[in-house]
Amino acid sequence: MKKLKKNHLSTAAIALLLVCLADLPGRSEVQYAGIAPNQASSMREIIDKRPVVHADGIKFGAYDPHGDFGAQTNVTTEALFLPWEDVDLETLRVADAYAQARGRNLLITVEPWSWDVDWRLTSDQLRRKVLRGDYDVNMRAIAQMISQLKSPVILRWGQEMEDKSGRFSWSGWNPADYIAAYKRMMDIVRDEAPATELMWSPKGEPGLDAYYPGDDYVDLVGLSVFGLQRYDELAYKKHRTFSEALKQGYDLVVGYGKPIWVAELGYEGGDAYMRPWIETATLKQSAFPNLREVVYFNDRDVHAWPFNLGRPDWRVVESLAAN
Image 1 (tube, rainbow, N blue to C red):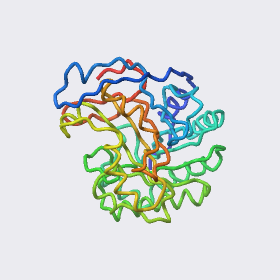
Image 2: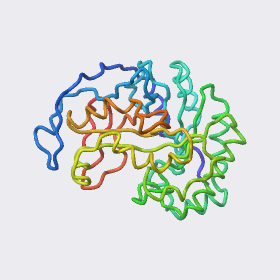
Image 3: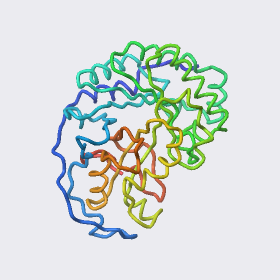
């Protein structure tokens, strides 16, 4: 078993201490819905694409390693991602203090692998070791640390499990194996940190129902909703709105009767494409009565998208990240 080591979370936690608040972007009347990109659809003047947070709307949170939401007072949840190997768990205290100072909850996504690709197991190796209990000690260490935090914590383990793209080592497992692994990990969390809320978080694809672990193991359901203009043009032959992108996954999980979150939100494109996402992501809509919160993924994607589109940069302000 690999030991927990100091690595990635330290950098992310320190980045959380950065504070920056940019003005909300203004309104635009431009609308365009074509298949091929052109000057009208790709024109970009928006310099800060953070969602408008409506006072009477859906709650808002952010994964914010760059600190772009640090001074924004209407952020309810501070999200972070945590591998269960090669990480210094003491840095969770830094994230906790940051969230406490801003009156925010913590949403902790535990990814059951190493962020060092040289350490990663194959999907089958990981599955067998998790089910055998080899990683119980890793999860227990995380849960014990969570029990010491002052902020309310939501734990999200092994997200997007129904995805078949190969993006994650734990995705696409036999549903019975995934459910057994999920329950094993959540039992540890309940034993060590019983006040923690549990989030089951599929991507929102057909077939997700086979991975549902049962009502007793789910306090919240999380979905992933991303909008990339050029991908929409190639895959759907139109520009999708936030509501259109959310609908499939929402309709697949609403029957569970659980509060629903967009656990990861991001969008990128021209002004006309992004404006509807900016203005409606936290707007209460009658079509989504169970939607409680959206959490923006304020960083560059860690995986390349289809159609050779590279790694989209979801960050709300322009970064220097190259494609």
